[in-house]
Length: 299
Image (tube, rainbow, N blue to C red; front, side, top):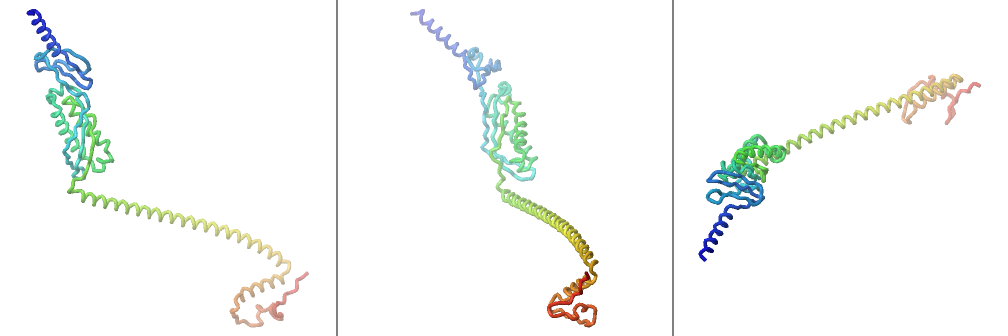
């Protein structure tokens, strides 16, 4: 019995020392082995590992996963337009160098998050001050966010961390400037609308003037072609008349007199005071009612 008790005690001590010397590293963690307060080893591979029992060596675990900083406070910044805006952001970050993380922030995620938050505010202040509200919200948003992330990530590397992403949750005008901004936006929209209406009116006048010019060209060309056809017809008629009148001069004279009568007495109310013996009435003398005497055609 006296031999069993020491054996059992020895086994229990050995099991205690073994349990204190073995530790398990999860795939989501870093394990840092300390020896008398100094960093001896950083383990990033999951599995069962061995160390000396306390107080010779201790183990501290750090999260490998992506962490989130969601600041409940809304920060204010001034844009290049001298407008106060309220910006709400969140940051995705992770630990990449446990040794630097321990030396710079004593391995505290709270201290690290505070430093990253302060760096984020500085980066946002610098970037927003160079841009307008429209550029921050939509125009240059990707470029703006990438510039902020790069600056914050550069500062985070000094504490053994990396910034994975920075995003804007909300960008609003400060309450005291909202009405002024809305009035300015309304005035700008009216200016743009008036400018576009003026441009449209100018284009309309231009199109109308071009259409009128084309119309005048078409009419001029049509009139030219009509006059050409008419001239050709008149020339042909004159040629025919000349041929006919050349064969019978008296008939030609009679035809011209009829044309003169037709032109003179076109309207019933026309009145002329002429000597009855004038040559104008040469072919009306001795005419019977309803018919005029015509010269006999020469055979």
